[in-house]
Image (tube, rainbow over all chains, first blue to last red; front, side):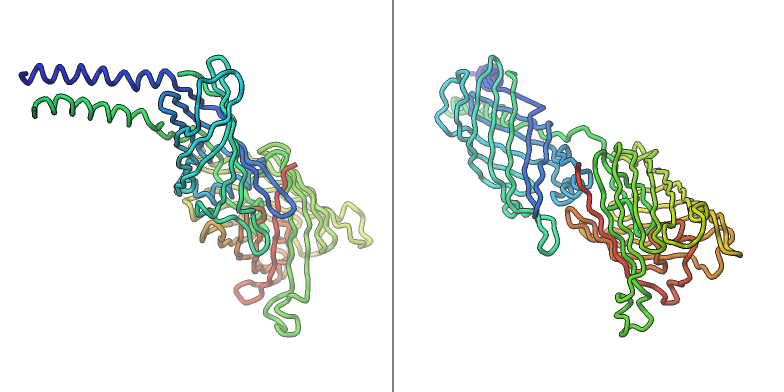
Amino acid sequence: MNTTSYILSSLSLALCFLTVPILGTAQSYMTESGHVEFDSSVPLHSFTGVSDHLIGKIALADSIVDFYVDVHTLETGIGKRDNDMLRTLEADKYPFAEFYGKIISDFRPLNNQPRKVTVKGEFAVHGVSKKITITGTLQKVRKEIHVEASWTLNMKDYNIEPPGILFYRVSEKIEVSISATLSSN
Amino acid sequence: MRSQLKFYLIPAFILLFSIQSFAQMERKRADIVEPVETFWAPTLITQTTTETLQARNLNVTIMHSFGIATSNVVQNFFGLDNIQNVRIGLDYGITDNWSIGIGRSSLFNVIDIRSKFALLKQNSDNSTPISVALKGDFGIVTQENRRPFKDDISTFSSVIISKKINKQISLQLSPMYGYFSSVDPGNQQHLFSLGIGSQINLSERFALTAEYHPIIGEKNRNTNNAFSMGLNIQTGGHVFQLFFASTRWHLEQYAMAQNSEQFWAGDFRFGFNVNRIFGL
């Protein structure tokens, strides 16, 4: 085999292989307007932060789940508190809260009922990444997938110092939940 | 044999890179432009800042000033035994740019109604490089003094211009005008000042502040330009402002009109403000 025919054959073969991820893309679902919220509590008071800028992608072909949100889009209803939160998260330095992992539970073709799934991967915020396992639901609705999940985040695990002074401190444990409808790519 | 190995290896590498490029989405920052937080509270020490409340947010402030810290230090415990003035105030955000408020000072039982409107807000993308706000205050002395109501009125107005220079330093200039409906002989009914304020952030939680009220034109008798310096402590809910000040007033028109102490001569008092914002 001479060099030219070898290169041509290699490229042809690679092109065939490349169709595999392209097919994978065809089975992936995406959103740029998912909902994420967290519940936090301070003595005698609790508050919720929300964002509708959750970006996510689920690729069924290889079971990949990829979500992230720019923490600057989180709002708690009090502008001053939003600024405090961004300072605590060092948002200029670490702008994203993100999860990247794989569906590890048995995952049969979806029907219209919500199906319980377990995903395992890395959750990162404040520049610290930890392996976590999250249980949620996936529901196929026509050409879309609706996903819901929630878990508890311990701020200490991510080197986030709960704001406060003396006895007045935000609870270290934050309840995080996401809800998103992803459209077929 | 070696040629055959290459035949399979090269496309395998190409395949590997193609899978990796698909694997994780590129992280993109949200396209949002936000107002910059120039100061940590709507009030620096006595001076109003350009910070406005978000719509439907209520700011509760409690402001205290004590006696002169440097006279009769032991007997008066650095002036803490002599509470001079306490102002309790509420401010409410009607919109993100307009707030109204009411407060009561224990000194002369002055009740004041005030409003602030943000004309410009410095933006995170620097498309608006400065913040500008207008402030008005209407004060009434409610202490019994056998004077007609019309003699108990004072007003205050200012244009507040501020800029956050960098992550650490914020500066503010406030041309201000105070009016008193009735004054003692020799005192001024109309007072002008160019307020100067600054904040230096030491960390995410602590900041140093200073403010000065130099009077432009004639001052009242036995009155000096008011100066204060303080430490802000931010706790994720409250902003505590501990300060040393020459004036015992928490209203700007009175800080211009009545301040007999000279800060740099050692005549200063301790005081503190507590700010707490609630979402309604």
